[in-house]
Length: 492
Image 1 (cartoon, rainbow, N blue to C red):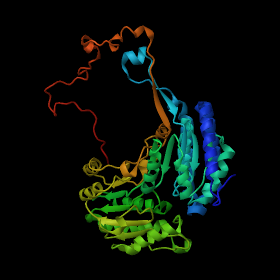
Image 2 (cartoon, helix red, strand yellow; image 1 turned 180 degrees about the vertical axis):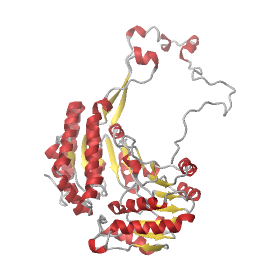
Image 3 (tube, rainbow, N blue to C red; image 1 turned 120 degrees about the vertical axis):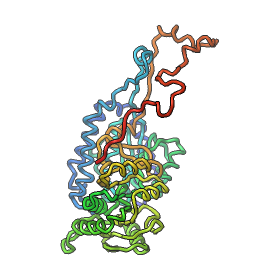
Image 4 (cartoon, helix red, strand yellow; image 1 turned 45 degrees about the vertical axis):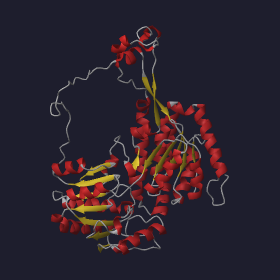
């Protein structure tokens, strides 16, 4: 293997691999549904055969407990692969558009699902296995070839992916490259047909800028300061339990976890008390050791401890942790104000700022900033939930839970604005790597009926192309006269 002095994939090898991927895609083999399904099955066996090795690598790199590794990464990947295998033929089938008699019946118009081509998949460090494998699964199903770039901050996982991929998948179609910032800069300088990136918003901007040079379409799964709102009508104990759990999982290093909590003043004291109880329950007794994952590296540990040290809020439980072991327990910080340094950027760690504020004022504060990837709402009053939904924009929303919306099958997961663009999971993952190609066939015998389009033009044919108001509205109707269907969901 031609590697650079750093041990990462050399520029020469990156170029060679990319040329192989292009040649493989050009051969047309990946468009065969039977071939795609076979590759998906091999990807499933890659995961199934190596669950212990994957869990061990995740523990070594980021300290994930074996169950958390299986629950949040291994099982979710296997489920996603099986979903793609089960639905591949349906998702890939041609669609007949509702295009009227001429195009649908006579013209036989269809929408073909065609792969975009060579995809570059760039994974993050917080879910270093799942968040390269799930996009790869979608790319395979769509018929793309793919270059996978795992995070260099999780070297054990990256090495495992690099070793396993050619053992199970067709190496001329799916390959791995490794590297840090310097190597990534070169990788991004090359042309792909699609780029799928999961990571931070600042890095996402660099990815988008590099892609723009080649007009390459992208899916950017980013993050942001996802707030949780706990209203006076919430189940306080359950809210505290689920919020504490969301900060415990992966040591709070999750893009859709609670960044900070707005809690109504009338339940503030009760909420904080229950939050402490559940936090202590999840961490367990000190002599037994915590099952919480570790902070990914010293730089991020220092960043988080500086946040704790510099906050103007009150640290009511937790600590700056152990730098050598890269651990920080869930640290609850009460009486935080909106101008606290804790809220200058996404926390991405087990720090939990509490802001005493009603839900309407909280909504005002949320809308002043960039659109978050997720908002979590705890309330059992429909008017409160509707108000928050109607006055905010976010990638997704979980009601009376945290992060739950990301687990909804085939519903799509993605951000909006600064929190990302594009979506995937299930069918939307397949579509993220797919071009919808419209194909129209017009029979020869219709040429006389379509003669109005040929010059010389004649205004007597205007009626043949005019659309009128065939949907049924009339001049003079009022705003209130309109017939509007649908309605909002009655949340409870």
